[in-house]
Image (cartoon, rainbow, N blue to C red; front, side):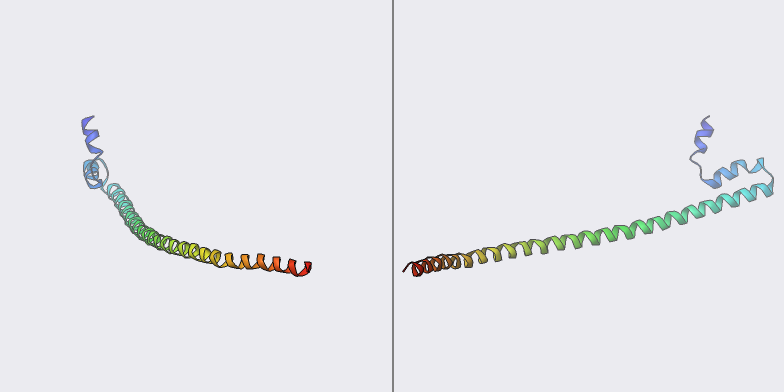
Length: 112
């Protein structure tokens, strides 16, 4: 049982060497070729996924930076909007008073 548990951590070449004597040479070489090919494909997949992960992380970082810039711009625009609204309110107040005075004057003219 201990030997079996130990073999679970072996690399493919180590496993192949341990069973080499149990098989015909041609069958052994064919199986070994298949396993080496599979391992190479898995290595390529891992490399490809690592590259994809790296590019995705770069895209995320770029998006986060753009988002932070847009939030800063939005803050500036909100402050400007608040300032403009306050200025409009300042300018409207005298106009409303003039409108009220004009209404009163028109009422006086009609009454005379």
